[in-house]
Image (spheres, rainbow, N blue to C red):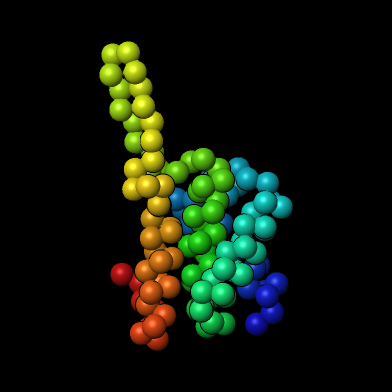
Length: 115
């Protein structure tokens, strides 16, 4: 499969994720394409093959979109009467990155499965 076909397929999958659809639509199309290309290249270098690269790259691209749009759902807030503190919970790691890492670690068992 041609790299441009993979990028296009990942971008299509990304736009179908219901929890991320508004985030992706709020970003400029050019930056989404760049993030998807970066995710595909990273997944490829991490060992994803033609058979499973779309699955891995879509989660990594989702993470990139989440980070760049500043809509990360892992922001926690503490408020006292005179002070409010907002910070990343889970050290800024979102569910998309966790799923990518899980898929990446499953490559060694030659079996990628959704939980």
